[in-house]
Length: 81
Image 1: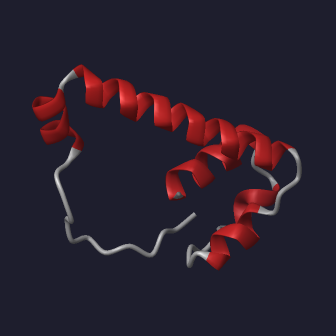
Image 2 (image 1 turned 120 degrees about the vertical axis):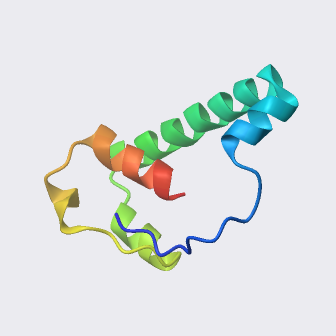
């Protein structure tokens, strides 16, 4: 999947946040990533058309989605979100 994003930074990066907030940032970040990936996996596993959903938010889906596994598609959707 190819995201249509700008290269311009908008805020602090993960390294700065980790330095400022420590383990609280790390715990929150990992927890939210696990939840996000899990939701994407369940949606893909239940047959949700990920390409159509990504197209609605302006992200162009690649042609490999038909041959990729459930986990790979869920991971791509998670990263695009």
